[in-house]
Length: 456
Ligand SMILES: Nc1ncnc2c1ncn2[C@@H]1O[C@H](COP(=O)(O)OP(=O)(O)O)[C@@H](O)[C@H]1O
Ligand SMILES: N[C@@H](CC(=O)OP(=O)(O)O)C(=O)O
Image (tube, rainbow, N blue to C red):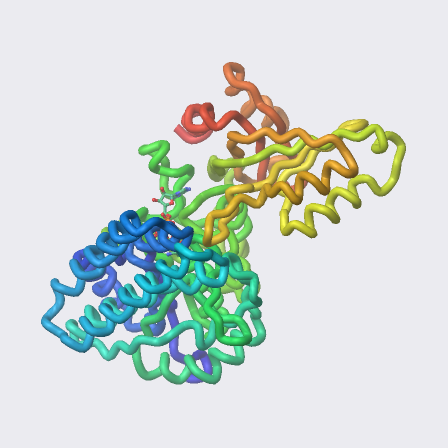
């Protein structure tokens, strides 16, 4: 885009920002007031992806009909607020019919490919409706099927984007369109080599916006959501959490990785790689401002010791015991080879003489929501060690700067936890975080206590 020296902003709107006609109107106003917005990336209307995922799991006829009726209601509420448009109605009906047939197929046999095909219809519908809302405001908006440019591998449910191909495809099919019109497209979905629909994993629309931003040399990626920025912790847990006005890529990436749902963890990878600032704001209240995430060099004020408290739920702890570990080489290599074979990425690791404890995010972000902790994995691990599994844990992370060089910092954190048991802690791999595992039932209380001690 920058070839013609135009500024190019990619604006992404999440599910709540396209939930209904009112929300879509607010989001459309944001697009209208910023002439630099060239590409609009949309999630499905709130609740739609969950309904589609449930249908993809294969439901009996009665439940299926209830879910289909709910989908119809969400999309028709928006459609009927628009001026009568029989062609648009036919298109939406066609998509709803496709969903009905695919759900029937899923009730006979499910598959990851079918799930991705089915769930993609949420973003296909919201983007189609949003074009009409922009057109209603006399905007020159066109609908674009993002699967033409977001090329991925074929790991359905959490496909890996193929960066070089995406850049080439964007250059060939999207760049010139975005120079002439406001392009409205879908987040979350892509296609593999043979043309089958894939998805980037739950919450992946932020990632799509960043991938398109990188490919089009965008000047900024705007993430419009239901909160006016990134806060010192999840404002749903601590209502008086404070907004962070500017934050470095490194700090925000740690927050996203450790559970701050406001940004998909992969979003900042293309942004960092191409040094594109990311803005986060509320589509309902754009005048409230938001958070800008950028390169550390752009931040003039001193970075604070503590930035935020993050929480990731549904964590699993694996404790692997083996006497063979004693003075032996290669045990950990063996364990990690098995984990890699089962597509498990390990978060935290601690070791002792004969055991190793590691945490995995079993809930993962796969579109079909399946657990990564399979019987096949446990069976294979059991061939090299005794495996103990502890579920129902939560991972809490304190994110900040230079955490390893400040005296008494750990006392300040752990001193707050005298009424709780900590199952495992990790510190020192990076200067940006200190994290530990606690019982799920203690998680919210601990976040509140730590937030109070550090920020209030
Ligand atoms: N540190 C944080 N700052 C702001 N929001 C956070 C933070 N941690 C978690 N969240 C949650 O992220 C939510 C927004 O993410 P999400 O629901 O995925 O939005 P969208 O559907 O717009 O993509 C907020 O409603 C908030 O509860
Ligand atoms: N609709 C998809 C993708 C997405 O990113 O949604 P949201 O932006 O509302 O988190 C999901 O629910 O996972």
